[in-house]
Image (cartoon, rainbow, N blue to C red; front, side, top):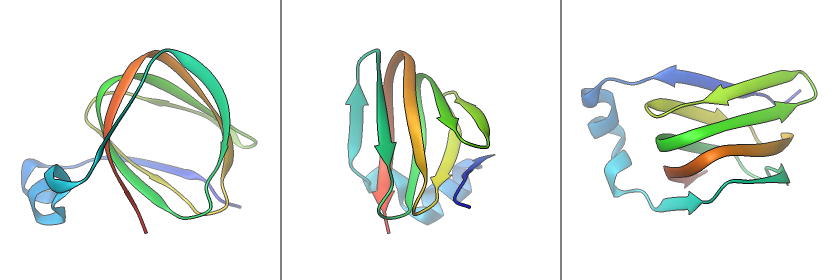
Length: 89
């Protein structure tokens, strides 16, 4: 079952992964369903989001490095405008 993984990365880990060169995505307060056809890695820069899944809810805050596994079906509940670096693999 696809899930969400959240961790904190050091500045060194962020630099090693080249995260600052990834595209940036921004979205206003909203709520929408989403299904991941590929794995996504992202670093939350601003905002607060609750990711609702069939096996629990995950709250994302600035500084969280998040992996959304391929096949995950969820609902994004953006509580305050979100800005993130992202990369699909």
